[in-house]
Image (cartoon, rainbow over all chains, first blue to last red; front, side, top):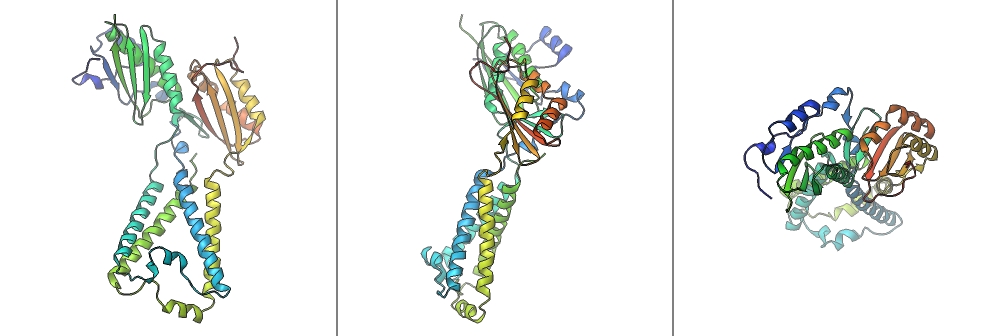
Length: 230
Length: 170
């Protein structure tokens, strides 16, 4: 596969309607690789109230929630049991503390206390940051117009839909689509000597599919066309 | 519509408590380095004030109860919902004629949210499928489920292989 150079690889290859026909019929950048950053969404501009259901699909931080809830509940029940045994006439044993390196008998100036305090601070900062950052949704949010509707497409689903769309283009022998967090990479192998014609057609197929399902927002598409043998 | 916020609130509170405990330990380490962590006078204090231990036990019991409830909810209790047959039937009628749809699921979670899942083949026209899911269709699904103002969370998946579809016509 040839490598591209220069600025044209960030030039949008996909346009809607007449603009696309003019691009395909006119001068097409001569190279195997194309980029589509911040793809224009003409249909979404024509639809008032269209939005991407991002907030409803944000991760709920379930694994971290389960882990912290488990630790807090175990610690809470252990301390409760200790206090109840103390109420029933037992003596304060500080059992858990004594088992952890006899820390109950140490002074505040002990190096171990400093290390543990630093770990507490770091863990607290990590938990707060983990709770406050929005995170990346597992599903790809799609554009909707209903405020009570959130639509998410699985990554495998988007990959298969785009692969099917690329295979529908003439002279495409093989195609591979990779969906990454910030971009979609499409690798196409086509008939030898026709990569220049194939590139805008594949770009149009990918762009049309993304706009039709409403997944074009904030996602860069990178196309790589590889000439086949013969 | 927002995603589930309970875990984030719990994580932020736990993080703030950890931060406060670590900061207090560092402050005590700086100010009173020679004082033992578990002061022997604490036992005398407990004997002098017998009400402290029951109050602390009740507080710890409430904290353990809240944490256990958080654990159960975080593990998914109550978020799976119940299958909504009328909603499946209504959605199936609305999607009739679209090629390649292999599964439709509608579940009612709580009393305000519907979780809808649609699985289809790669040959399915996703644009047409999404166009069918307009406000009128979703309103019918909500009415069939008995929750006219429910939020709908739709999960769309394209399966690997094509198969016979219960909603497609030859």
